[in-house]
Amino acid sequence: MNVAVFGLGYVGAVTSACLAQRGHHLMGVDVNPLKCDMIASGRSPIIETGLDDLLLQGVQAGRIHATTSVSEAVAFADLSIVSVGTPSLPNGGLDLSYVYRVCEQIGQALRDKAGPHVLVLRSTALPGTTDACGEILRRAAGRDVHVAFNPEFLREGSSIRDFDQPAYTIIGTEDRHAEAALRELYADVPAPLHVVPTRVAEMVKYTANAFHAVKITFANEIGLLARQMGVDGRDVMSLIVQDTKLNVSPAYLRPGFAYGGSCLPKDVSALLHLARREELSVPLLASLPRSNHVQIERVADAVLATGARRVTVLGLAFKAGTDDLRESPAVELVERLIGRGCDVRILDRAVQSATLLGANREYIERRLPHVSCLLTDDPESLIHDAQAIVVTQNQKEFSRLLEGVRPDVPVFDVAGIAVPAHVRVQGVAW
Ligand SMILES: NC(=O)c1ccc[n+]([C@@H]2O[C@H](COP(=O)([O-])OP(=O)(O)OC[C@H]3O[C@@H](n4cnc5c(N)ncnc54)[C@H](O)[C@@H]3O)[C@@H](O)[C@H]2O)c1
Image (cartoon, rainbow, N blue to C red):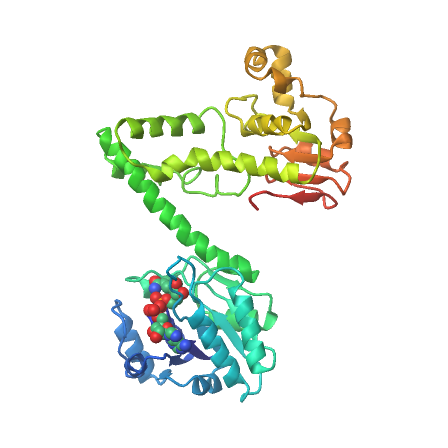
């Protein structure tokens, strides 16, 4: 393919060299003529292992050129990749002026060129930016332009390897022509390719980077606490990552409800107590209880905002298959809703049978008398009478019961349950 790459910094230079190696013809574009001269003569404008060799090979094979002229590049290319900088503004926001300016310039240049053109945004930008680029381009070009977002996951220092062996390629677009062009561009890359809505692709990039930041900070805070107790945090973390069932896995990484139960709140609390006692600052760990509490408040606020007063809560224990009510976020949710004047009814068969058998009765009667009397074993009326429903556990019975919900009743699914098609389902953190 004939490809123009706008912005010859870390991303643009590596992208150009790696695509040329795969047989594509590249035209690099930058406002900085020095960078263009370097690329055109097969020299890397950045320090990056292997990049000089790859660029030189591309130039010698006649597959890499560079220019400061946008119209020359657009005339040459079927597909334009935008990899200009998106730096931070003084207020922390994103400066998209370079991205929008280059889109405007490409659009203007397209006025002098017939035929379809694909624009791929590779700069990191928040959801909605690619759509805005599409509008700018179409307005400037006076015709349709096919747009897509294609996040870049390379790390400086190992960027050629990262480009050649990515975990996956993500294409964010609703445009079939753009999708086909990007499939062709990456045909030789040995990795799964996911085509997703544009905004999902844009958000994935931020999520990945936020997740990396959380992991680094988490490891440092754990290391600090471990050291205080005479433990090497590196040994701890190397065991932590070997559990790919719960630790480094999809477990617990689904937006939904708050954590709870007899372990997580208690154990986080013990670590925070230790940190306070030892005067160690662990802001990430310290933020967990507050953030978790806010999630419960959000669910309650979302229910109250519907104006519903008769509310059914499906699931009271902190998860399905247990009668353990200690630190259950559903209990706190119910208490909040009652406190705000709601008439709440609850279905939780495990808690109910534990109460009947006496196993958990003492705890419930002592700690939660106001909640236990809301448990009912008449699920049909519970569904029939509800003005709003909250599902806090993933149970087949709850999916079945939702078959009987009127389509106008809002159902808040914080458990990730299978919901019948007619149900007006909403999440809170999704
Ligand atoms: N550096 C990384 O490791 C990395 C990894 C993934 C994603 N990203 C993202 O990729 C984007 C680019 O990052 P970078 O590190 O390559 O930036 P960079 O600052 O190294 O390069 C940006 C280049 O764009 C050029 N430019 C600016 N306006 C231009 C215009 N109108 N026309 C042509 N060229 C223009 C600049 O002269 C510069 O050479 C950013 O959004 C960044 O967040 C970077």
